[in-house]
Length: 250
Figure 1: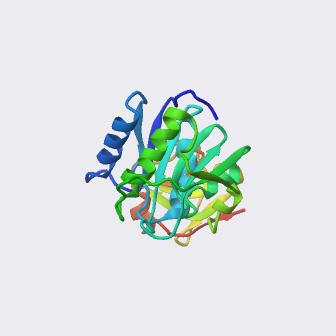
Figure 2 (figure 1 turned 180 degrees about the vertical axis):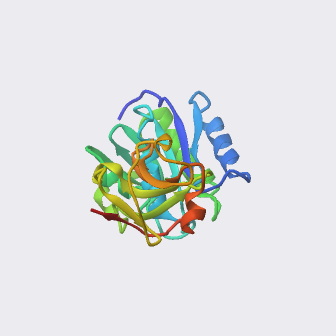
Figure 3 (figure 1 turned 90 degrees about the vertical axis):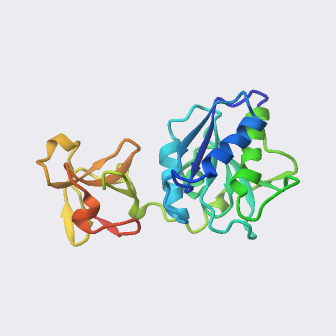
């Protein structure tokens, strides 16, 4: 643990781009840790889909500066018995619900520690722990370099839960209709094909290598296999959505 403040506070969530939720978390951070830069890392995670969130959280947090604090919230059980946890993995801090959201982070970490957070604020809503609980916990870590007290060390491996790794399905449909899967590109050879919706698509390194309208898979900028249609929508082409299964055809 360190007394130095964090370089960054980052929010990962399924809150969506509309509504007041991201702004309220940012306001809580501004009050509790005004000197720490803060960003919305990604708030378009598929709603209620903890497994998809776990893979996207790992992919999108890899380029953050060491010591940064990520508040991660995909929390369909908010207000229920699930615990609040803090994870320190490979130089980054994470805080959020103990529901499997940190499963991929923990499973792939070279070094990892975890704490169950028993601290609670004086006012805690039943439905917005992202603002009332996890935001002040993240701010405390960013300022002090440690979880708030009372917190107790716990086995990080138990946080993996039932999260599949890899997740052989679509975990995100982006604004272009590209299909992000939960498969690391490092697990696949370029000669392999990706099976989806009864079709098999081959590899191309970039969009410009394919004629318009053709489907292919590639390694996206975050290290995941992504299925796309050059100048078109893969979601429309395959009739695919979050949850659509894929397979590796060797």
